[in-house]
Length: 113
Image (cartoon, rainbow, N blue to C red):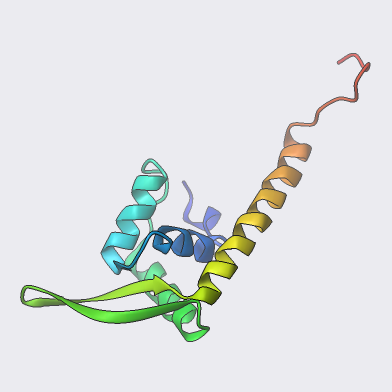
């Protein structure tokens, strides 16, 4: 899938994969890829600026966790992030319904096609 197809939906994708619980950056990338059946591949240069922005606006919080010798920054949703995710889901549903109505119109009942 084209990278520009994700533009405008990245925040919702990141919030959704963090809904079950905290993840570090690479695990977020992996979760998006797995949930999409491999169709969506995010790059580190794309997600880290987005994660930092979402944290700055209060939708995420982060903490450092140690894993052996390595430290990983883990991100999790805040209450505001949960509310924003709910709004993103509503907006996505409305968007796909509207686009679907144009791309796959349903003829009025009784009209021959």
